[in-house]
Amino acid sequence: MPPQGYFIVSAVFHYLGPAFAVLLFERLQPLGVAWLRIASAALLLGAWRRPWQAMRHEDRRTLMAWGAVLALMNCSFYLAIDRLPLGTVAAIEFLPVIALAAVGSRSLRNVVALSLAVAGVAMLSQVHLEGDPLGLALAFVNAGLFALYIVLGHRVAGASGIDGLAASMVLAAVAVTPIAGWAAVPAFTDPAVLAAGVGVGICSSVIPYVSDQLAMAKLTRSGYALMVALLPATATVIGLLVLQQTPTHKELTGVALVIAGVALRREPSGVAVAREPALRQTIGEPADARGGAL
View (cartoon, rainbow, N blue to C red):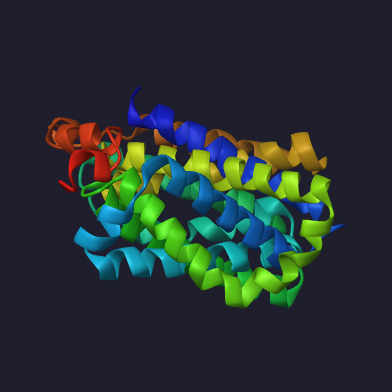
């Protein structure tokens, strides 16, 4: 599958899970939902990949930093979407990664692609940039952390891939427990809420983060950052389908511009070939099954 295909899967689930999480807020606090998402993803990825070798042999500082970013990013994201429409948070999330997308957009074609995507996101964000001040502040915190997620995630994708993701997710679960673990306690007396929280973890973390690693293994960092423009557009569509948040004509135009920009961009020749060994390692056996060869 081309990297764009992996990213489309990631984009759909990136906000499909949170859209369902919003529906859980009536029965569980946002931080509790965030804890369930991270903890369930850590349990599933840990059982699948058994990333203990990655934690011992990979750059521990990168994995620990990514784990901390994952924990704080998810908490700030859920607190933000509890106060603002999902499309608003998604649009703000794109702003810090424009610089990442600009780096490496050296051809005229890619500059035009970036311009179209930025214009599309601007049209989406202009519609909803008014709202709860705390919600907006949390959305911008989440945006900064998302940019760090891309930088650190791209490093991991070129090294240990999904094994590194699993290791960082386990570390994220450890980091988030003192912050949000208390808010998840009521879920353990409500099997329906607990099951829904695990479902959110699968839809919001396991599927999109694994897809991100597969996409990042074949894309430059700037190429992946440009594709992040799909997230506000996807969030607008998901907001319509799941949360009945009807988009305006301006938002629909913004979605069209984003899609055009992403379709126009081309990766520099040789990038995918250069990353093929890393990709094969990413989707191969767990780290301990490979004898710790990272």
